[in-house]
Length: 437
Length: 185
Image 1 (cartoon, chains in turn purple, green):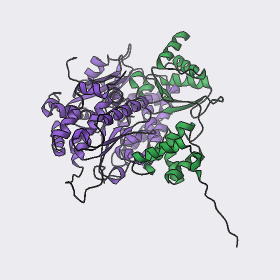
Image 2 (cartoon, rainbow over the protein chains, first blue to last red):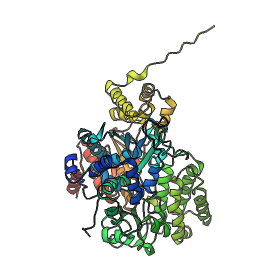
Image 3 (cartoon, rainbow over the protein chains, first blue to last red):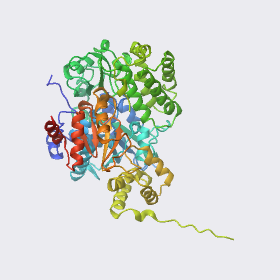
Image 4 (cartoon, chains in turn purple, green):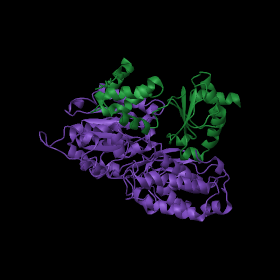
C-alpha cells in the first residue's frame, strides 16, 4: 500500500514545510521549468487536456477545457486585453472538507509552482491566491513561499530567464462560504459583496476586473507540476480508473481514524472508510454517508463498493464533490444531521435569489419542527416541494441545489426515521434538545 | 434668503499613518481602490478590535467607496465585526463534523461558564462568542478558533481550561491546553 505513488502529498510536511531550496532539491519547480522553457502555452494546454485532469473543487469540470475558453492573442494584437488573471480558489469551506488545507500548510511551494504553469498557459501576468480568512497558518506559510519564490526569480519579471513575467499575491478573505463559488469569489476579490454573477459572460472571457480569468481549486492546480514533470503517460497510469490521477480522499464523523489519504482515483468507498479510516468507532454501525462534502447526496452501506470517481458516484446517485466522506453512524439522528446541514446553507445563502434566501430557512423551520417531535405528515410534502423549488435552473447559483442534495436523498433513504419523529412526537435518538444553534 | 452651509469633515485623519500605509500597499496590489476595501476593513479591525462607524467613514473616504456600499460589504462578511467585541473572540465550529462528534456539549459548557449566548460579550470584556462555518479541522473535531489559534478535539473540560488559561492572560497553545486538561483530571 505504501508503494502507491502520492505525487501531491509525498512532500507534505505539516510541522515545517520545505523551503524553496529544499523543495527544489526534491525535484520541485522542474515542472514549471519545463513549461516555461520547453513548451509554448498551447503545448502545455494540450498536455493538460490529454492528462484528463478534472477540477477537484467539487464540480469535476475538465481543467484543460476550462482553460481553452480563455481567448489567446498573438503579440501586438490590438484586441488583446491589457491583462488576464489566474486565481487559486483556496476558500475551502465545504463542511467536512479539509484536503486543501493539507496542501496549503504542508507544501506551499507546490501551489506556487502550479500557479506559474497555469498562469503561463492562459497568458496571465497576475495571479491571486484567494485564501479563506480562518486559515491563518496557511496564510503565513504561503506568504513565506511567495517571498522565497520572488527571491529565487520564480516570480516577478523574466522568470528564470524565460522572458515570462508573473506577479503572485495572497489575498485573505473575510469569511462566507459563498466566496467559494467562482463568480462570487471574483466579486469578493473586487471588494464587493460576494453575490454570484449571472453567466454568461463566463469568467474565462470576462472575470476579474472584466478581464479573462481562470479560477482553479488548490488540489486541481497541485496536479500540474507532476503532469508537466513526468508526462501524460505517467499521469494516466497512476490510476486504473477511467478518471485520471490521484485524489485526496478524506473521512470524518465518528470513525476510528479520521484523516486524509491520497489514493489512485477510483478507490472504493469501502477502501477509504475501512482500510484507511479504520471503520466506525466502537459500538457504532454505518447508517449512511455523504461522499464529498455537505452538498452531495447521501449514499448507503449498499454503495460501499462504489469507486470514488466522478461517473461511478454519479451513477450511484450522488456526486464525488470534494471526495471527503462525512460518515453518519447509527446513533446519530439523520434528521438532526440534515437539519444541521440546512442550517449551514441557510446561514451561508447570500440572499440574492428568492428560492435560496427564503427556501433554505423554510426548510430549517420545518426540519426543526420534525426534529423536536412537533412535525406533521404534511411537513414531509412541504420539504419535497422545497426540494423542487430550490433545484437547478430555479436558483442563481449552485448553493441551494447543493442544499437540496442531502435533503432530498435523506427524505428518500431515511423516510422511516422522519416518520418516526412525527408519529412518536419526539426524536427517537433522544438528542433533539441539543440540536441546532 | 437663508444660506445653509455644509461642511464635509475629512475623516481620513482618523486613521493612523501605519493603517493608511498598509491600506495603500493593498491598493497597489489590487487594480482598483474599491478592491482594497475588504482588506482595509480587516486591517483597521486588526488594530482596533472592531470596525466602528468612524472607521467605516474614514475608509470610505480614503478609498473613495460610497459609505452605504462599504457598510453593505462590512456586514456581508462574518469575520468583520461591526460591534465592539471582547479581547478574545471565540468562533466555535457548528458544521457537520463537529455536530456528529458532539460540539453541542462543548458549546453548552462555554455558554454556561461565561454566562453569555451567541453574539454576546462577557461583562469583563474578555470574551465574545460567535459560531463559525466549518473550520476545516474535521479530522480533529470538535474545533474552535480564538483569535488566530485553532483548538482541536475539544471536550467541555478542555474548552473551559483553554478559556481559563486565556482569562489568566496566559497564551494557551494546543499543547498547554492538553497539559491544563490533565491537571484538571
